Length: 432
Ligand SMILES: Nc1nc2c(c(=O)[nH]1)N[C@H]1C(S)=C(S)[C@@H](COP(=O)(O)O)O[C@H]1N2
Ligand SMILES: [Mo]
Image 1: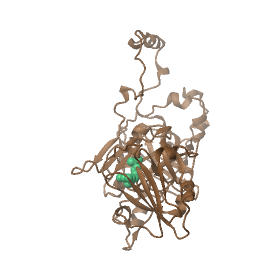
Image 2 (image 1 turned 60 degrees about the horizontal axis):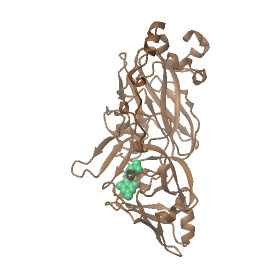
Image 3 (image 1 turned 90 degrees about the vertical axis):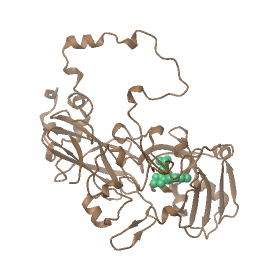
Image 4 (image 1 turned 45 degrees about the horizontal axis):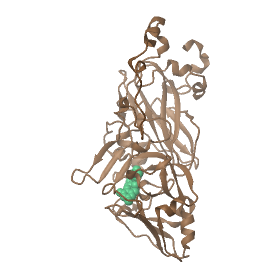
């Protein structure tokens, strides 16, 4: 198959065998020859007789299939694609579950695999009894039922949500060896649909003295945070739908705040109260948590915006390489400041870089999928990816980030992730 390729296309454009991204546009050729991690070899290599045998009807073609279902589930053969759970041993309702990023494709996270972060479990809220109240520095306090909110004009946006604590293993002295999703998977991307918050705030009539909004959830944690009013007026939505259906209980049913580009904790789930004020409330999650002590002794606070980040999802730890071949390097990039402008990939540990292909659509504050053809010669390699967003911000190398933020870092880790691949094709997380 490779014979059909223009030899020019197989000229590396950077160290370690990175090929030009235009190769991905050449209809199917690369896919036919690439041994993508997880597969064996291209079926077209099989002898004709084998192909005919394989066509003989399998058991499932000889009896009628399963009947209809009222709500579909993934194939039983995909049963291993699940969230991994990291709950507090003494308080199992406090913790996280991680999106298995390495097992997913495209830019949408299936709702059932959206990561979870709960401070005290998932409340079972009866939507008929739930209320959203807007009060404080407003001309007219308002109380909404869920049904009344469902009647407002709505908007949909594809938006990622990332916990500020995502990837915090990156601060560890030694690289953690876990599947990608179980240390970088506190980030997911959904289509969120709901009512622009500005519409509801305008209806309440904002007192000019108001600058902050305290948002509170109806969970047993009664989690609350302070949010800058200007950002909420700009693009926050009171979301009622996630990927076309009503929000899952874990993600905030019957309604949650979605604040594009802001760290997860600000996206208050099970939203029940918005109080307009002139100063922040100094809640636990904006003082003792989700703040960062810097080497100078000062702490960063209200670091709402998620900086640009990218991850190579394949090849990644615990996947398999199948010898020297042409691979498609696949990954995700995002930025809380807007669109991803470019993603560069390195196969030689960051000595040289080449630009990956960005898959359309490339949207603001949404996952962007990138792809890069790579001719692996079977010798040790170190893969990295580096995102640049439309503001010109470039994802930093890990050592630069650690130097800048010090050893007390816990939140907002967005250092470049490196995968080391040895001559046996074993992939591990490395600091390089
Ligand atoms: N009411 C309430 N809202 C909440 C939380 C919570 O525990 N209670 N967790 C916050 C945190 S820290 C994050 S990262 C996101 C996670 O959203 P998800 O569980 O839908 O992924 O919700 C935020 N909103
Ligand atoms: Mo979070």
